[in-house]
Image (cartoon, rainbow, N blue to C red; front, side, top):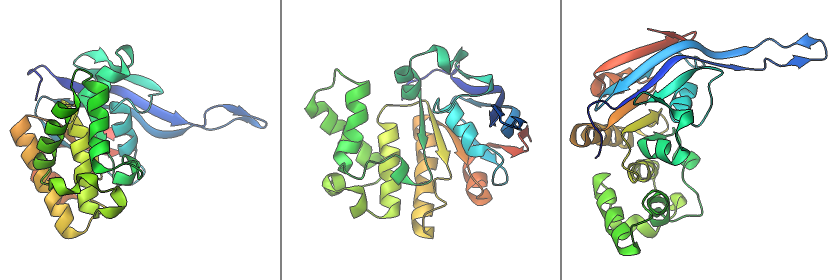
Length: 235
């Protein structure tokens, strides 16, 4: 895994609002997802982001991953605004895994195709044989048997699908991994396996992880520090 000790991902005084445009009766009142919120994740850190439902945790994650714009403030990747660098460069450094792998896996693709696709986009110099070797290593990293490569998401268990989503994210060799409620939809055994996998990845790869969730057992187990959200304020 690449990356130097100066790698950071940070939101500075970020605000996201919805519905602030005018209407027939006058201006609509803005709905605030979060306001004036700051957070920073350093090289190799595992940071928890917790708070009540509706406080904007998932929106923070999407903004950090350059999947949604802030209304005010900025997101900085190693000191540079993510909106001033190319999407390819940003998404090569920051990946996001969602609560449901169906949000990130194409139901029409095999596991092989799902992992092969980002390799083709981010590593154009790799030939098919090199990509196939890398896919095999990624399957091993997430503890999946290669016999599953030709299955589609509907033919996998929930835990297996989430491991594929992790492998797909790791394919681009990111420096930061944003995990949004990644175990909340899984049964206990699958949940425990994903927690162990994330712990192993963070330790072995010096991969920085932002763990978004309600599960304080998981957060306490994995994270060196925790940031709390409530009405958009940092705890």
